[in-house]
Length: 309
Image (cartoon, rainbow, N blue to C red; front, side, top):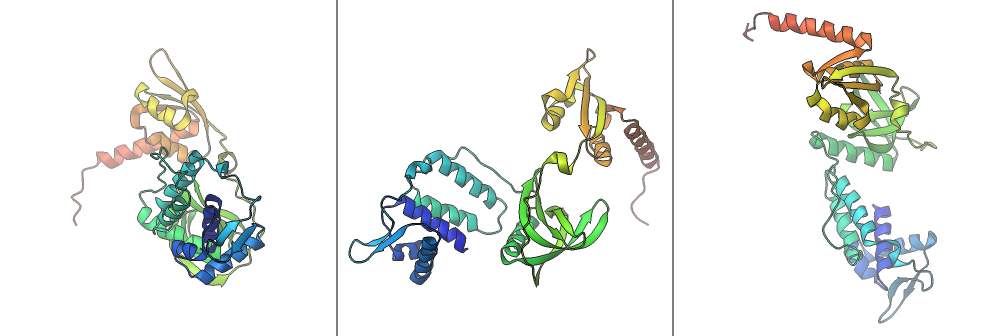
């Protein structure tokens, strides 16, 4: 990608007093003519680059305009590389690892020591996730519509969108774009998307706002929950809601008081605790859990079927 190569060239120029077009061409595996065009593009962008001919000549940033190399510290560079490694964990290619090598080659004096931050953004669905991310990124760059089948709580549907952002949030990946069906911006979870297609239809880029990914906006928590948990469930409450979500009673039970965003998800969440919890409020959740327990008794109280006709 040209923009990545331009950033790489600029990084090398900031780290070295002088380089040459053949050196850059070999480093980025492109022709000298491409490097010359890249240098011209950087000059048009306002970067004061000068070239000198003859023995000892080459490409450099003009004296007096050079940025202080300490603008990036060793720790800064380690954080940049950690971010690239995290993207490599969901990449279906070696693109990010190659980009890391290029950055490290031009910044060897800033990259030292062992990595202290490791981020893995992959999931159980990496085999299907990486191709989706790659295709969506291509669609965003080329401004082409994407089409896919989507599975939502409300049912299945076929959507066509103008993709603008690939988003990682709440341990999951999403695509944010303009939905032609809803005539509005929507957020789609990649794991719920199937048969993703890059169409041949281009779209004109809108003045798209950054997606507001605040949990309060997307998932307003307006259901007050009170429940009694067994003491050995403390670790889960702390992990999912923090230290202040419960109070310990004299009998050892944990009185949980929090707000939740969705009734169906709340019921499902409570079921994961089995008989380790008793819901006190809201009454609707108590009734639904009771009805489900009654149905389970009927299912498991029947004689076991053989599984054959």
